[in-house]
Amino acid sequence: MTSPSFDAPADAPEGLVLLGAEMLAWSDYASSLSAADGGAARDLVRRAATGAGRVLFLGPHDATLVQQVAGVAASTEVVLRSLGDAEQLRAQVDGAVTVSVGAFDAFTGTDYDLVVALDGLDRLLSAEEPPLAWDRLLDKVLSLPGAAGRILLALGNEAGLDRLLSAAPTDLDDDAHWPGGRVVDDVVPLGFAELTDALARRDGWAFTARACFGRRSSPTVVAPAYVVDALRHDPRFGALLDRAAWETSGSAAPVHEPSRLARTMLRHGQGVDAAPIWLFDGQRGAAPQRPDEVLWLDRHTGGPSLLAGIDVSAPVWRRTLLEAVPDSHVGLGVERHPAALEGEIPAGRLVFEQLAEAVGVQDLDTVGQLVRGYRDWLAAGATTTGADEEAVLLVDPEKAPVTLDNLLDTEAGLVVFDPSLRALDAAPLEQVLLRTLFVAADDLVRLGRRSPWPAGYDARHIAVALANAAGLTVDEAAWPQIEELDTRLQVGRAIGSLSQLSTAEAMATVERYRTALDQAEAQLEWLVLNIHYRQRAVLRAQARARKLAESPQYRAGQRVLWIREKTQRAKDKWRARNAAPPAPVGEWRAPQEGAPVERDPVEVDPSLLPPGYETKGPII
Image (cartoon, rainbow, N blue to C red; front, side, top):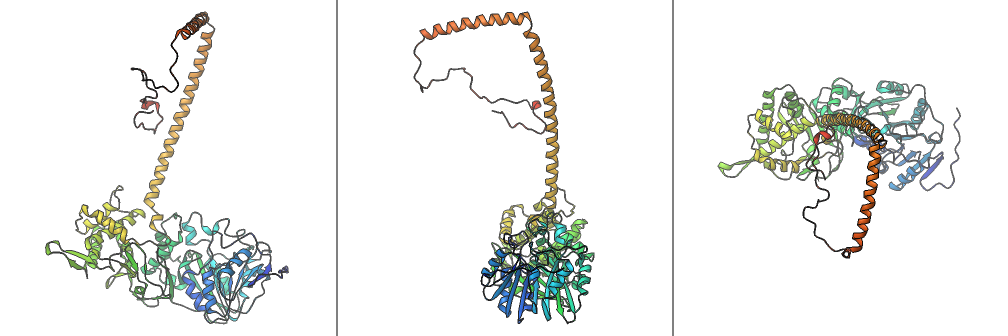
């Protein structure tokens, strides 16, 4: 098929190249699917662009990422399909960034050192140009790099973890694409294996595949595909995937607990297949790479995101910060020191996972051992204050904000998975212990984990039970101080939170709605029956009234009443002529004793009310 020619206007704004077929009343940046900002892969993009001669971005990308690449590359170009998006991006970036806008098939650039397509292929074609087959579109994209060029191509997964968790995935909204993508073909590669085979058939290319977890536009974990399979039983990688799965849920409550589903699919060897997107790193004329680095982006409310690289080639992982981030507050009484993330991560399991498993099988002995081990870890290095009879152990500020889901149980003892959090002040050991147990109990309740305690037990009761399993007594009078400490030590995550999901609360809500529906149906049935009864009573009353109206007694009574009414009117006229003048308007008159008071409260017979209604006293 011969590509149509598009005539570009001669009066194009500075820095813009109009290819024709521009989408004028459309914006990919304003759609429900955000522009790609790289997420955990942004350092990979920057390293690939450093020293590169020419860099090309395909599709909508975040202006900050484009600006960072423009600062390390000789020249940077962007291809978009919306004229409004091109003008907006051109105004946001500084320096010599050229933006081509319009029909992608009319774009004639070539010989680029690096092509970045983190948004995929779905938003490349304009609605004004003919659709392309998927293979032809891929060949067009792969023809842009030069002889030794490199491409970073992200392709979405239609069966990704984010779509399994969300009832209405964002990238499936009607306004995400136009309309649903412009690629048409009888067979489009689906799944990781088919996409890998399709790319392997391109001569002269070698691709390294990475699985990306988290939001599609900003992944949280980026790991080589073979690393995901190799680490499927490693609890440390499961902990990283837990956080990414919570961010996958976004601002809406997911239909399933993200962490449990992510761990299950990972352990069953489906981690790569469940990744929301796959990042294919391609190089012309080179052997495929085999990196061992896992890229991790951690976000907290109130502070900047932290980008780290984790070397997983050895049993003891090595974590390195990839960006300089200043210290910041991430809570009322918690600071974050990013430099503390630098260091080793020994092998181990999260204490919360061990606690949840022990609680689920009612193994209270193990629960007691875990709680006592955590208390001993808190007491190590604690300072003593006060008199001997009132001695209080103060926990180190570095340990105070650490919860059980941030603590690894290793061969060398308990190790903090994220040691960058630090409390502003030391806190009493017993309060920190109970606060941590309260947070763990709240997570157990919200996640609907199995437990031996009655359904009516809230987080406070379960926290007390966990302490009792370890042989510890709890002073009920200390709960106000514990709640205040929890308020100061809370650390909110930027995206995804247990507050978005509560299996127990969701089931309670469903049960409440079911009860309300049953009650409404009973009320409707009661009302319908009463309407039938009233209708029959009305018909009987109407028949009785007609029969009475036709009787001689009724006619005689009507005659007597007519005479009485005429006599009463004559008396009223005589009284009106001989009565005293009326009181002036507005004069107050004292109520007569014994006169009825208007709108007196009336007691309603409960038997007259529909089922489900309750009387709360007299009704006015």
